[in-house]
Length: 151
Image 1 (cartoon, rainbow, N blue to C red):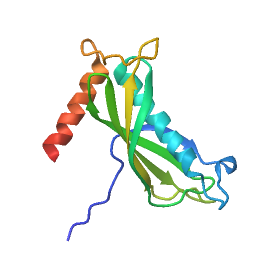
Image 2 (image 1 turned 90 degrees about the vertical axis):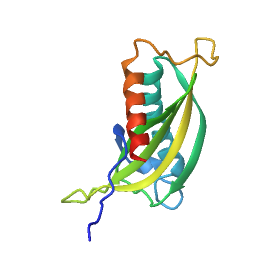
Image 3 (image 1 turned 135 degrees about the vertical axis):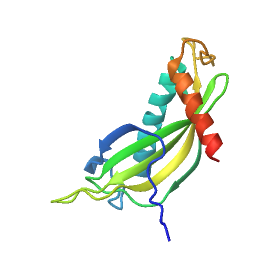
Image 4 (image 1 turned 90 degrees about the horizontal axis):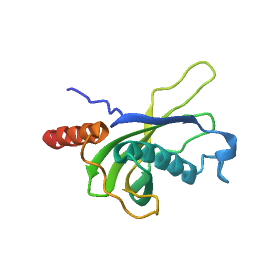
């Protein structure tokens, strides 16, 4: 029987270290801090595709599977799942590498969610994602098509 080991979905968007200042009352890393890291990573990808400022308008289906501890390496992976006229959806996953005194553990999934961003202009109004001369958009659409073929 063949077993499949799950790996992160998408590219590495952000990597940081969980610090003592990020803990909740139970001593685990605060979920809001993890969500903010996901939002930052997803927004980086969305902004690259939009070629302009983006704002977060929706977060969907976020579930925490395991706690995060001080000293863990927090890795946000993501991929664009949809591009609308002004909106960009990004699936973001958080994977952890636990750091021990003499080794680093294998990574494991902590949480994932679907973030929706909207491109905006200088006045803060929704603005279309440019379709021409946009290699980041072309790459995102190619990845979306590949995932749809695999489904």
